[in-house]
Image (cartoon, rainbow, N blue to C red; front, side, top):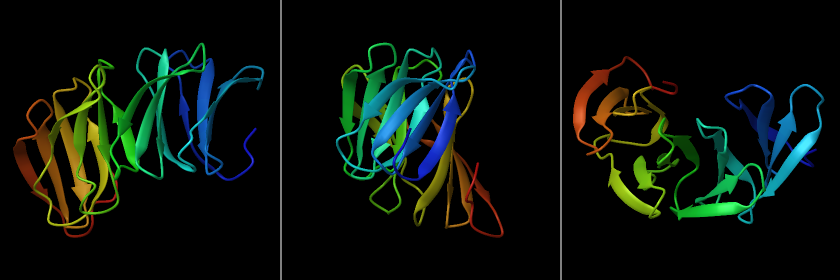
Length: 176
């Protein structure tokens, strides 16, 4: 297993496998029925801050504390893509599996949409006054919601990063 603290768990769509990630810089794919370790994915950027399973279950993405996100083939355990953001600490996968949403824990860590085929930035969400704490992708993949210490939850167009709605709250928005 892991040699340091486990920071998160995600299940694969078929529920037969799960993904864990750790401060030890590895993500592990486990068989949920037997508990057998199926793949160990070692991220070269040190501790992992986030990881997600792609909707199709054929890939996972890990995001290191240094801001580099790596896409992995789950069968072979090989890195198949890289997005170097320098500031991302969190990642989500769009439902179609062709884009990533990343964000960080500083003003420079703007929520950003990345095209996986080119590893290029599509757009960034600019509008919060201070750090974005949380983000989520709508099930259809057409919109994104972000939450911030500025007491706002904002809804955005995913293709253009244009603002749809600002939703004020009485306190920090730490989960969406």
